[in-house]
Image (cartoon, rainbow, N blue to C red; front, side, top):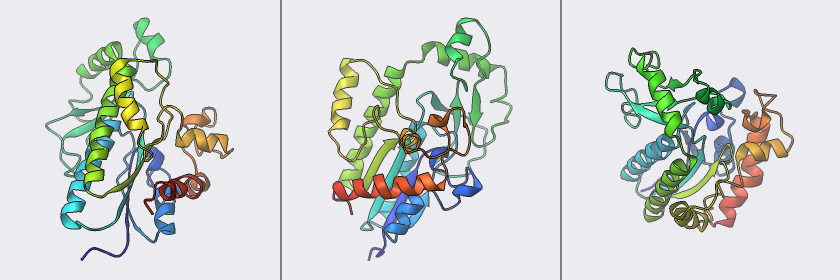
Length: 265
């Protein structure tokens, strides 16, 4: 027998993490959706997450949830993040959560001017996040070399193509296993020019009403345009972390209506 309440599952980065700031404790959009639908909320968001980590760990969790509760109603809320982020495999870290395994978050640059600094041969100050971020491997002389190498070969087209491919496969899994979902950006994705492989995958994703247009909608843009004030980055409000008032309004004005429109509630 399946539980008589829905599971509201959320995954993302700091923009959906209730542990990011005390004001967001049990006050992110996932919790507000859960309250409205009398659901149990499981929020797996981790600060500094990359898109591959968000999709990968969500896939693991959905496999496990369907194994334990094959008939429970699940509503998955996935907020995607900056494409500059990725992750690394580090053998000598302690595995704290099975779904995270030996992956550690990595961002090859922290600032908007990294391209200019890279061309001038200046440090671009990448960082590693997650378990054992201060381990010898991550603080070694190889990390700056990795940062510069990844920056040199970085392409938003490659990142977007791989993200679209991941989303096509992940949503197919969700549809097959009767998992409801909404997928959207927190920071709106960069607009890209036409490219055959990109456009092929993009058209498939954009035909799915349960996935918001990555280039034309983002939670942060929405909150900024609605005149909410962020908790931080007051000089860059379009990438700031928004308070519970914005999360509540986003749940009530965007997510719940979209779940109704797509006939998932």
